[in-house]
Amino acid sequence: MPQYDAPVTVPRDAPSEAQTLELGKPAGGWRRRLYTVVFESDTRAGRIFDVVVIAAILLSVAAVMADSIESVASRHGRLLDALEWMFTILFTIEYIARLSCIQRPLRYATSFFGIVDLLAVLPTYLAVLMPEAQVLIDVRMLRLLRCFRIFKLTAYLSEFRLLGRAMANSMRKILVFLSVVIIVVLIVGTLMYVIEGPANGFTSIPKAIYWALSTITTVGYGDIVPRTELGRALAAIVMLIGWGILAVPTGIVTAEMTAQKFVKEPPHRICSECDSTEHEADSVFCRLCSARLPVVPHR
Image (tube, rainbow, N blue to C red; front, side, top):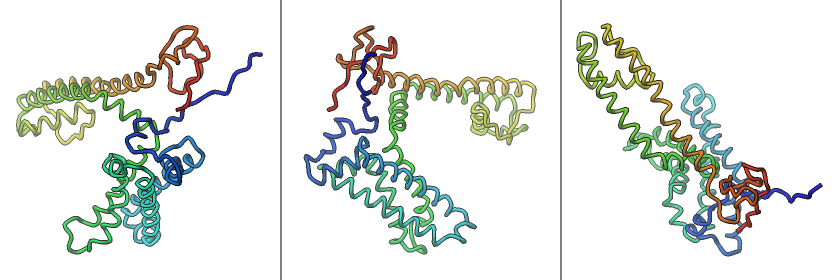
């Protein structure tokens, strides 16, 4: 029986070399150990840290949603307030830890994830500092802004980053698609205004465009409906077009995600049997001929 080495996998959530250089990874000491826990997930401590933060995010958003229910807030208001402060302190410690363990804290603070981390704790402190009676921003709105903590999940799940890259790379195609939809909605709305007219509820072209948009997206609120036979025929055509239109952006993003999943590998990842160069980052065997791939050395 041939002996195989243990599969070598590349951690999906480990920071890239570009991110390490951008933030400034410490050379050693307690900052280096803290960096490993906070920013890397290929260690036991890093994985535990990520799981704890993800659980805190979900529980915090659930507490905010429960606080918006009047009956729950009146009965468990003190408990929800205590939980809110517990989560706020936890996220504050996390934010300070991230800034203290890198050599360029300002660069992280002004990044997307740094701003999200700040928004996760800022509303709670602002709600305390600002009196409830005379404020320019309603305190309740500040409390609801805590739901933005859900964006913190994007820092811990690689699937979020994959979807974000796919949508960013598909942006031009999606914009072209949306332009076509806008053109169709404008034309259909104008035609429906001419066919139905104010007598049947289509009192203006913008209102007719609203009907066309709700119909082509298969929402159809029913507050405006065509009454004439020609108008109903046009509505049926728009509904059928709507079914096809909904599938277009899904196909664009899916194709881009598939293209990102199989990326070109460096020369040392070429399959020795079939010369294939397209494999997943953590592939151990070739996806075409099942031959064992060369091991990628850890950097």
